[in-house]
Length: 348
Image 1 (cartoon, rainbow, N blue to C red):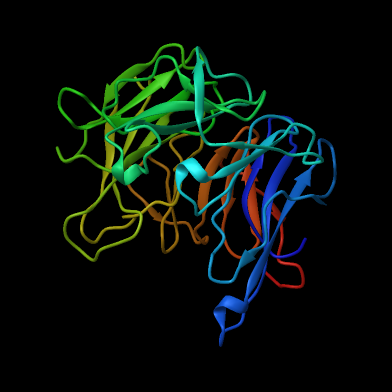
Image 2 (cartoon, one colour):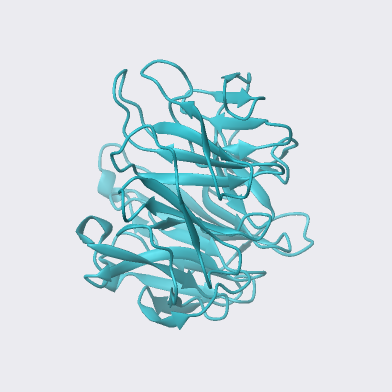
């Protein structure tokens, strides 16, 4: 596959999509450089990825690659153009494995009573409509439909303050999660829906601070739910992707116990993506410097000896991106299968 991969995703049947960018640079005259954008598709049951027609335009060397792709069901995906103002950005939707694309936009049209199978959950700005996040007073949850790739506001969202942040896809038990703040106290809180977004239950986390954080990353394991509270840390060296605390629930998110409180020096202090839960109190934290493992539910950690990577949930398992064009996927957080994508002619 040509170029470098980004935004790979999978549907529940194992089919997948990814964006590829093949760039030629000119160090002396950067504007002479360019990037050709491609779409890689993994059809259901196929043994290898194939290139399909990309609707994305060629980019000049100074523009940068900022498009995004989300998979919204078997053979279906939405590409969002990057860089432009929200109202001017284009989208392209396919329902036949990337053989044909239909152009659209980012506007939210109508409402959805529930989250359909294969859909992705995201947000848009409700007040003022269409504004960038930095200029947005209030966001709302929005469903990206697998039927036509259009955005529809979720009819009933959780009470999580002005800026809720949802997980894109459901956890393995079918639950949907979102994070934000408790409207009464302003402290970190999470919400869960077990009926495809028709109703939500909100629970406050035992945060180590009363100050609002960034968001909370939730992952459901075989015997516990873990919630990593993200936000600025006090003391010690400043870090990227700071993790304030790790919480655990043994009753599906009704009650929480703070297992790990980040200090100014003790690692892990950061998290890339999601915590990775396993059985018997095992949980992995992919930090900025390395991976850390706990075997007591997050009360203590030690380096695992493995490198770090960004982990996110897909309908077929946890997807981890480590170095170069190598990815790992796991259904249980313990056994990982490695695959490569992109980097033609490169040695990862």
